[in-house]
Amino acid sequence: MKFFNNIKTLEQLKKEYHKLVMKHHPDVGGKEELMKEINNEYEKLFDIVKNRHINKEGEYYDKKTNEASSEFIELINELLKLNHINIEIIGSFVWVSGDTKPHKEKLKGLGLRWHKKKMCWYLSPDGYRRFGKSEYTMDDIRNMYGVQFNKSVKTKELK
Image 1 (cartoon, rainbow, N blue to C red):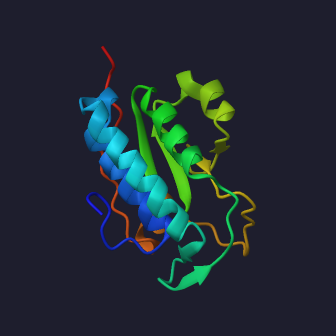
Image 2: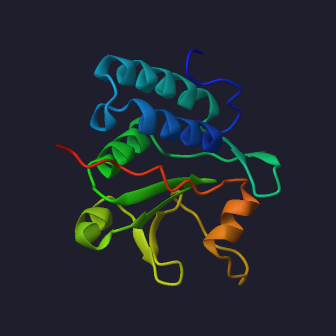
Image 3: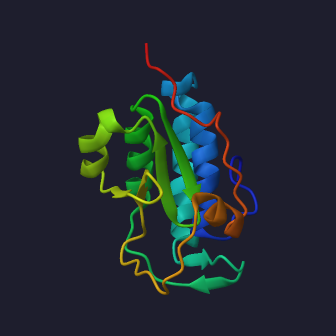
């Protein structure tokens, strides 16, 4: 694989795809042909790892997913069209923060939900059910999954 190396789970694939998109997508100054290559490789690898996951303890498990490879690609492409937002892939969730108020209806249309305590939007995996009553901050969640928030990962103003 040219773009995705040592990918073992769907979460790792999505996280790496997000990084590549933020670097190479035409809307952020990248080349369309390169993005097509990345998308093709993502779709091939998606079929291999789509049912393989990792939990917050770092343990691997298998769980069938009904998601299609194109769904995540389309979601990220649509989010990139929104200005002044931050996109994070943490575990199997997509989190969107920043100046989201002007994009409220679009975010709802993409299936994201508002988390009033965390003050950001999120998309959970299909069929996700929360267990336990523990409340975690965004920093707690990032730490559980080994993610550092990077303020520079923002969509750029389209000209």
